[in-house]
Image (cartoon, rainbow, N blue to C red; front, side, top):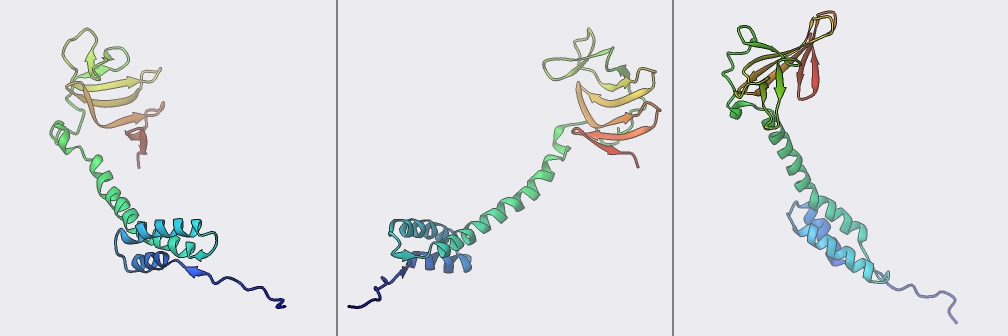
Length: 176
């Protein structure tokens, strides 16, 4: 009687091999479809078919171009979200708050439900510079407002009267 039991021959999934090879050749879609099918085939084979690792490698290579494309698209679209050209804001030459109507943001202005700034008691949206003061009367912040909408950078000062920097979308850019 033979003491060595026979080991059943293992077969490598053809779909796993094709998935890996097509992934290496950068063929779209095919490595993803065959990789998923091959992994299912290996799972259901009761250990008679191998190749789950090759199928996984094919899946990774198949999804990789899509991931790169999405990340690349993000690098293109995110900076476009920060552009203000299409917002119909005042001309860029009006960058200084000098010459604008100044109103105390805490006492003379109110922010209403329509999302606009108004002088207290007025029906017209405010245009000018909305300022806020520290308790000692020194300027704390200045925001430019046009037709009730704040635009541009918010300038902030510390209690000593030194310009801290500009605030844009809740991030402070310190003054150099």
